[in-house]
Image (cartoon, rainbow, N blue to C red; front, side):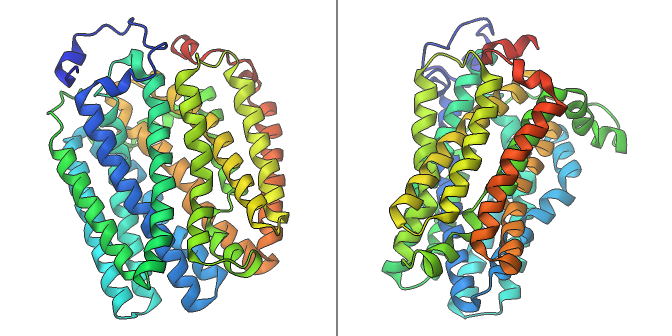
Length: 424
């Protein structure tokens, strides 16, 4: 297998599109991916545990939605600073410190769960979790693309999605099983901490990387360079905006504890299956995309996949049958993966190395807004209008967003093969 140092000598012109394992042939990328999978598994287990415990204790949709808000606010507030740190400091060291903070937060949640502490303490822990993720996301994303040649970026984007979805399949299932088997959420938080420690040691084993660090003096202009770059690249802005609003409006994940307990009337084990369902579909689609040639009409595929995401979200919201709900969640994950792969490829191929941290930070805000902030939006809407109307309305809103994006940025409908993104 090639090492990360051997990677530098490879030319970007080498074709890897017919090799479904191109990115995985590099040692440091493998270490990075395995560590990230473990961290994601722990995070997904913890998400299930927090959702189940807080809703079980409070029966409040608003409290459930607050889980996402507590994590996303620090990420939004620290976006520019975290991105600048990723471009000025050692990205690997930033990752290691962030992972350690996540481990401490998981252990603190275990203590609070064991002692039946006040809900506000759980929120405090989630705020620190958001701080850790604010610095981890841009540093890890920027470092990851240094571990492979440009020719493997599309393949890496696919496997990044695959690894995340694999963790999202295993994590919720283990989380639900852990709650049922261990009799509560406490032990799940401990397992999440152990997963974080394993990720820490694997990250330490990654070879030192040469980074082209920004030489600009620290200023508001330097901090905002990533936002400026995204704004000036309108197709990138269109892709990440579409992805953000689709998941922000159409995501039903935050409300799954309510659907499981009150609508579908199932237990924590079935909740784990529901949580894992989108990732099962996403993992399947990611593997398919890895083996197939690059999409020839990426723009239309992106738009239609998001329309499909909205449709299956509406059906999920109306369903009262567990297996139909499970199927719709599987399809939602499969359709979402198409937009994820396209967006990641477009962003990374177009972004120069000295801006990767700041652009990754901006991208992480869009992702966080669509996930954690979307969870708060869903919880708030469910509190006022009920969970069914919240999810169905979100699915309809997603379809409206597709129409709006196609009208505002008509160029996105003309995007061809992913490989042509290098020349946009």
